[in-house]
Amino acid sequence: MMRHKLGFYILLAGFIIFLISKSMINKQKQVLSNTGSTEVTHYPKPRPFLNVSHPPCKCEGDEIVGQVPEDILNLAERRREYSKHQTRVNTNIVNIILAQPNSPLQYPIHGLTVTPMKKSVIPGLALHAKTRKQYKVSLGVDRGVLSVNNDLEGVQVGGQDQSNLTISSSHLDHLNHLLSTVTYKSNVYHIRTSDMVHFSFEDYEALFPIVIRRPSVPVLYDPGKDINSQVTVVTKTFLRYNELKVLINSIRQFYPDIKIIIADDSLIPEKVTGTNIEHYIMPPAQGWFAGRNLAVSQVTSKYFLWVDDDFVFLSKTHIENFVEVMEAIPDLDVLGGDVDGNQFYFSLMYEEGDEDGGGCMKRVHGQAHSTLPGFEDCYLVDGVVNFFLARTDAVRKVGFDPVLKRVAHTEFFIDGLGDLLVATCKGFSVGHQQRTFREVYSKYRTQTRNQEKEKLAHHFFKNHLKCIKY
Image (cartoon, rainbow, N blue to C red; front, side, top):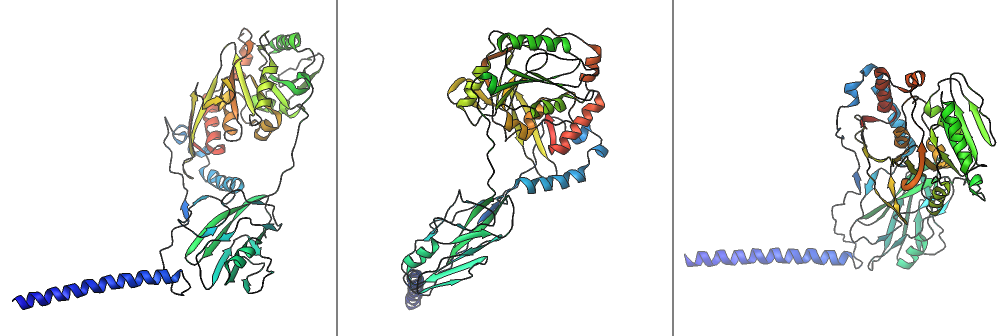
């Protein structure tokens, strides 16, 4: 019995020694692969991409689909137009790119922008590897060609001026010299797109984007020498000529020479006279945003100050204060104040949602993102009151939707979300005239229930929204 047990333990010990020896041999193979041996230990390749997809968003309140008849929502057409919109605004970089840990590959991860169909050097390419008998790297692209300036002997290059390029050499410094001369040229003309570079060595692979963009030409505005050349006062009027005259007189009391632009869609236009006033007559009842578009289209100054036709300038209405902030913060596009002490502002809570359902939008009154750097009484927000100074070029790029005729204000800031940097400041004030009821004016100003549904359907399609809460 003792002999059988002894034999069993001897066999067990031998098996354990075999396992340890096998493990040591495997480790030795891995070392050899880094010291010139052709034996390579293979590791599972990590996934280079994480797909970015937006989950459905959750509405606070009723969805638009439940409030508006489906026959006016046009679901299929919205889906097609949204797909085209994504093509226009995306640059093909729609996934998260993962970097492999402890990679010997060096490459640019951000900031590489090239002109379409023009040869450009890819900076920063290099290999940092331990000693080997031979080094070989590969690069591949999808929408262009790669080339290299091969001025060294003993270096093999394959795929010159093609989408896949290989470089191999027994000398690491020679290889890195050639990597420093690799160029990329897109073979598809597009003013705003991208390509993805695949850079590999043995089992290591890196991916990095190349942004392909046609340089845009700057459009600069003469900053002017005084407030009269820096700012144009802009308003839209409809059936309120008495209020408009009060507004103009109050402006002239403090700014006698500043230009005033008026867009007028009154049913029976009246003549508006005065120095440095431009009065544009529109077809009757074209609406609030159509008038804004017309007025802003005629501005030639760097900034314009938007006012309603029933506002009134006060001794504390200082346009210069707006300009001072805007000049100090070049990124700022719109700066709001207050009307009769009401500093109305809001933030927009927006989730993109999925492709079929659409996004969820909520307006939160009185909520700011943060203070404006350098101005403790100013706050970064998403929307402000109808008394604001704006950069002319920035607002023109967003525009005012002329479909919105009667009730429209927040909608401009919804369209500008992500494109316009907006702030509001305390103490930048204008007055409001005493409100007077006019039956005809009220008829055009007030939405019917059917018009409310049409407006919701418009947001559903145009802004790809599942729901919107004011």
